[in-house]
View (cartoon, rainbow, N blue to C red):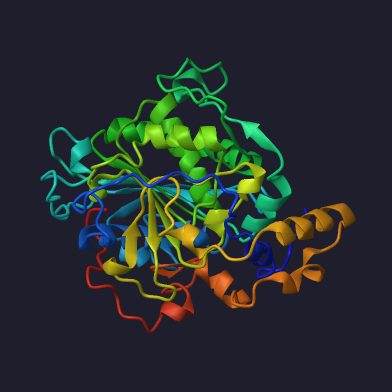
Length: 412
């Protein structure tokens, strides 16, 4: 596969705004208590902290992460973390990078929800004991759009993989929740297949050693798609219930059947469920095209659990983040739809047929209101500008004040 310059892969993403032909699901009527128009300060603080943790993944494969938890980026924000392992499988379309760490922090837990009296994480611990967490962080890739375009026409059938107890090779037992007529993006599934050979052997002893610890799977961009597939396997095949999944700029992973499946497994879009109790948070950002890729015309769909950052520039506030309803909510990322996609399909088809560099064809078909630098940064602007492993993160953040609830040891 050809490697485009750092900025140019996002040109394709500039074409890929949601289509009027996309399958839409009517919004379910909810009362104001169960569906507020913004998130709580505690959930905001949790998401912001996780964005820094996923930003650290960009040190894997570059300057690295060293024990106990040291790197050139934001590691000093987390003195209570102990690094377990990292992995880096290369720079191809199926690349996968990330780290696993254990957080033994004993700071006070988040304030309880007004709806349940418990936090989302206490609800998974019958003893109400928040002793720490296990972090599994998946890095994104600058070739995300290349991956989407090159492999989007080759969806692969999805079935939950065997649990680690079966050695990963025997046919899986029929799961309690079967995935019927499910396909997923072949490139995303390939990334998880590669990462699971490191992640599962490392996670199993940690889960046995710290059974009360919540396992947080977090990912940005391609890492969000891999985190989704990892979470499904851990929950369905391995039977682990103490999972919380948080993704930033997650692309569409699979078809209608897969989306219905992941919604069911993680109880996404349930009417009346408190916002803070959700165990799958798919964070999107205004003008970020990647959550709308691959295209609906290619058979892909977004799943529920979306939290939409409506403010285009940094930094956001809790009032800027809207919990969305169902798989399709016109108040959220789908509302950023731009031009019809007829021209998009023509550009991509011509590029494939003539084997020409996309940078020379269709470049000026991007709607004029979508500036290239905005598209590039929108996919990185999740609380901070993600994706650069240098002290203090991206230089754009160096002069910024910390968020009001900025913490280093607080519960996620």
